[in-house]
Length: 457
Ligand code: ARG
Image (tube, rainbow, N blue to C red; front, side):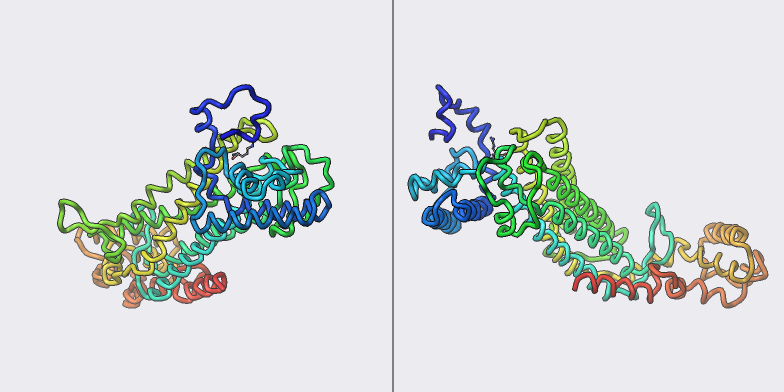
């Protein structure tokens, strides 16, 4: 196929170089945005008198018919086209003749691709936000149903203090809510139209950039045309938000993997989100969670690829920038797929409260509360800490736990200990007594649940 720019050249592009240069196999994803942008551009051209109203109508009809045919599959992409912009324009001219050649007035592919990608990513970002909200909802529901499920809270993966499963899941809700607002912030910043920047320097035509921006739902125009065609900050911001989502999902995946092991057995994943082994008949593997954890690296890689691609290129457009799309498409598709499988996996996950509770009875996770008990009776915290440490040491030697030690044994360490200590170190009391805001205490967890519910409204 003859290139649109063939006029200047004596020889055609080498076949291998042509394939290397072509981006249609991935930028075809943006065909809807490309057509929509072109229709609005043509409307603007007619409204300022650069083309006639009839010409606009012909162009719009032609583009709409291409859109319909691509949607229905009647028209397929020409894989020999250089990119989606060239493909749509060539197809338009094929359909409506010379009027099609007027569409590219006061425009360049440089601002066109910048526009298409912003439009495309604005939609994709909204899809990610919708999925994040679903996942937050699923976690919140599990939290609501497990406010009484006491489990060990960990630091260093060592049993630390009793918490509720609800409190633990709500931590992930907080993380994912930040992910939502991170994306929303990025979308706000990217919602300016680059169209009309043209190749880089603007145009001699009396265009109305604000009109196009408004009709495409932007908050305004990119005010510097050089920046308009060279800015890919929004790709970096979104990829970085996606990388953070993946990091959060990966941490939750790791916990899900641990929790579903026989060593923990805090949860049972639904059969529909686990797989078997080809050789070991007893296996039920948490593959979805492992894959999400594994795919996190890809999204980090996409972010790194874009940052690195941009770091050395001078203003304005450089072909390097064609690399932005595969990276951000991969990051977006990965995060969408991962969230898609996570939502039902969380919804169907069954917590096993007895196992959580049993684990919480071991490991002296009420030791802090025992020290607090002494402190509240006037013993300075450091001294109380030391007394309890010695008692824990004695328990370990005797193979027993704090609640099983007799009062006599306690009194040998301090005569401040009384019968009421046993109530004080029961796991239920340990949780109930956490009254600080944000804590694992029942009231605090209710406040957190309310906060998440409000957020999701
Ligand atoms: N396919 C190109 C890209 O994705 C479109 C812009 C081409 N502009 C140009 N001057 N070669 O970046």
